[in-house]
Image (cartoon, rainbow, N blue to C red; front, side, top):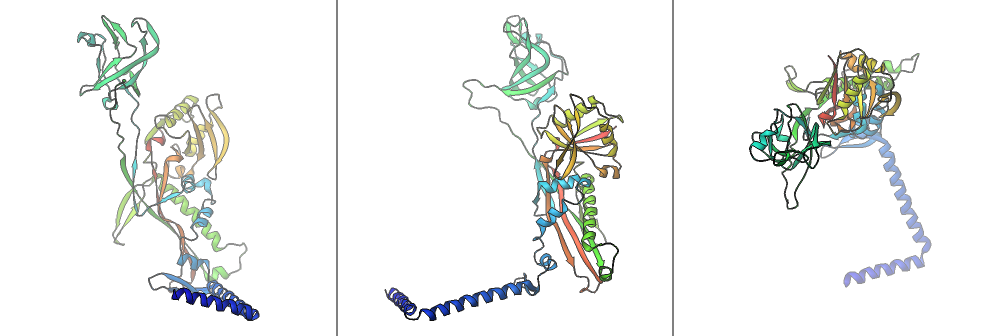
Length: 468
């Protein structure tokens, strides 16, 4: 109650003061506001005229000096990162398509220089019959069940259905041939093979649903499972991810300009910014080659007494290969290339083909047909591609001179942008070196740094193209 009485008394005196001396109260309030504005202005001016002093806990504070971009980089190196990235992707993007696509997709931060990741593949959908099968085998045992030996028995489970390609089944009477291909039903899997019954099988003697004669090499396609009315459970499906890893490589580039060079009159306006842009391009070009063809390795440097990490290129990570043996690719060759690139991996229907000059030249001789269409241009990720369309999917073609530089003018790489991931331990950043204060050189120095790597999250969605 005492606190309430005191509070009430203070409020009453304040109200009486406002009533009796309104001019005085107004003057006091205005003085407080002006003092606050003055202190705020002083604070702003102090920040604008900034220098750096160390903090108590090891941090850095900006006071008493001009706030410049160099000081910004020193106190907060990642502050200008987004602007740097936007500038980088505009520097000659056609020359470094892999680096360009990965930057547009965004990088995941890695807390270490070694990146561990998992790949999950899909279960096979087709295999072939390993041995010939005779229809009399099952009936001799008094059952329509047949034991088949395939090249991959483990891909089948009980209750799976199988489509037998190229072999036609029978009508319900088991005598007349059907227009539908033969379908089998798996009853169990044993150590010797898979036990099946025919859904639209042949009548052999007194037995219906028998499996007819099958030749070795016949293609068997795994289809959906079929359960009975009382079935509650089904064979388990396990997809075990496979662990893989890559190293983040530290990429660096240093730009320097002497003080006299900066002050000298020049015929053309060539500044430190121009040198920085040229350095970024050269750095990206080197990174492009490492991202494509680098070898994952840890190397001990005997002079520096430390390890140097090298990133593994995505060329070695791709899960499929396509070979060709002609200087001019025919329509059939391109259709087969497209078929292999887009089937069997459940990837995207739009992929990127990066190729050397000879491979792109071979594809350029392709005539436009109803099956394969070429010549249309499309812009993606800041890059101009030539479109190659087919019934399987669309390829974005681009000449990559990196393949020529690395002696692979005949080769190429099909990548699925949806399954390429960049990991960054140190994002692309710039750091100003004060070589004058350290007594080394009278120059302005700038160091560009990035520690990163690329991984293919789904190797089967990417394909190498190589000439035999």
